[in-house]
Length: 429
Image (cartoon, rainbow, N blue to C red; front, side, top):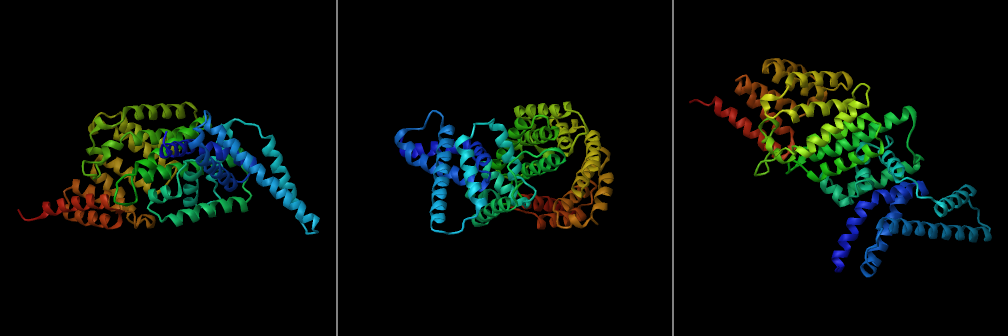
């Protein structure tokens, strides 16, 4: 294997192993930032040695051993410096000395606990509510997704230094807040799990429909979110909402190929070629939804959204869609997790089940909602319903307004095309 080939192999191995490596190290050193530094140093050592020695049979174990040895060397050196300072009569913080000794003991006597426990601890730590949302997303992609700072910046169209600062600040915040590296228990677990699910969902949504830029979708982010969701489902098999989220992501991802036209343009749900929908992903999604339902209890927001997506997935044609059930599910979702965006989606379902006039009445009520003032999908939906009612002049105004609010070029072009079609309908014949 050539040098470049070996380097590519090492980077691939590290991406696969990095989350487990950082999780195992964080359990031992109880500091996510330090754990990542040790993991990166192990990677550097691999890049130096493996081209000559070849990739080991168990690269993950090799990296872990190397990182642990590096941590031991560093702590022993620090303890030696401490003794030298004491000999020179300098004051040393006794707590710091004890903490370093305890850490050294943990590293030297660490057992390879069940790796799933470590990964679950890392998931809850990187998604801790003490961090702002954008920091949770960046840190999760970095620690659990194995993405580089450059890759995260490129995915979210954010300058690389901005992402780097978010990650550094996130690690510092976790350390300053003394966030324990543990799986929360009791009432706190539900709140913390909600934060984890939110992060994964945000990552997927940004990939599924990009908020800005030239591309309608960013498949890499969808794949990262799916992988994180599947890992979480294995780590927390008794959590119904975890399976609900996985079901939602699997079914949504199944439509990826059908959502983009030959020139990269968006293809809306009812216009998609359903033969392009991935039946394997649909099957996985329906199975995950069944697991969520089998665990019992009142369905949560993700399970309800998954049930809505399942209605679309089961319909062979747009006309076969059970819109009455979808409207009822949105009603249940509005009761469980009320929000103006849910109400907007419910209005669309009602328009399909009971006619555009019924949907428009619900949408018109939302035009007074302050949180939707800059939300481009509100005038987009309203414009679509006005088109169906033959009110093309009003529809054109709404669609042009929607185009002015979106930051995604592909979506803007689609909205302007629809507005132009309305103009042609009103032009003198």
